[in-house]
Length: 84
Image 1 (cartoon, rainbow, N blue to C red):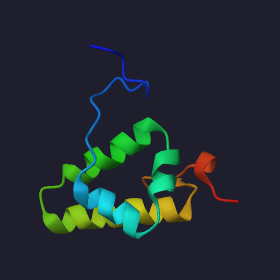
Image 2: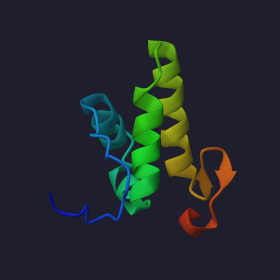
Image 3: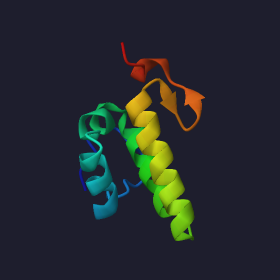
Image 4: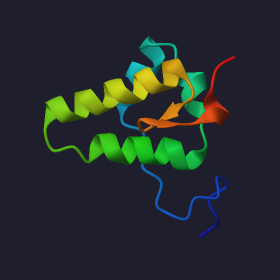
């Protein structure tokens, strides 16, 4: 088994269709892909682990809002993704 080119040591979560659609609809595919692999993976795992649909939707909205705003990751400052 080859090494993950992203450098992740944890299993990579596949992106669900509903997340891909939401990223595309909001025009945030590039912002998502620009984030480090660990952030992409953390977002997807966090969203898909939600047991209730409303929690999943709330987490998805938070990710989309953070990607749109830039400079934020999981409600924490993330200067590397700040938009100029």
